[in-house]
Image (cartoon, rainbow, N blue to C red; front, side, top):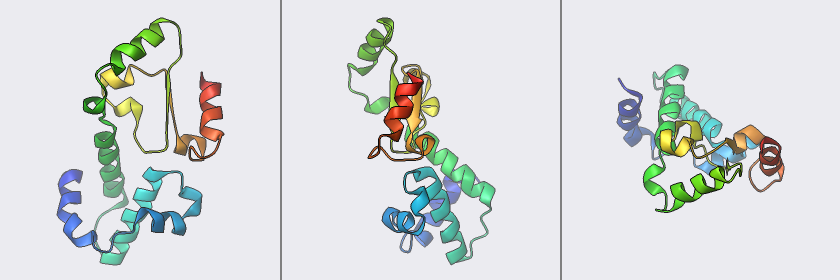
Length: 142
């Protein structure tokens, strides 16, 4: 069964008692900046709560597929973004992405991923964008 179908088939069962983001963050404060890991932890806790026979590998695949889907942002770009970023890069400006979310620029499709020289996630930096860490890491990458 594909991870998408597995997730959809379990959604009606696990949604009512699903951990909210704030509950997961409160339960795992050291992961509060890493939405991908929080999702994995929440799905594993839901599995245990409901007695589901879903393996860690299946949960990892579900989260991987979700992140790939979540990273597909091309349709949401403003009309002038691609041309503007290409002009910046042609002028020698290094362009990076800094995100709190769990999008993965390398999985955003060829067009979007080609716009960035690097990407820093909150998980990479070990802190959310409320702190200076992701920006300092981006400055170092540039």
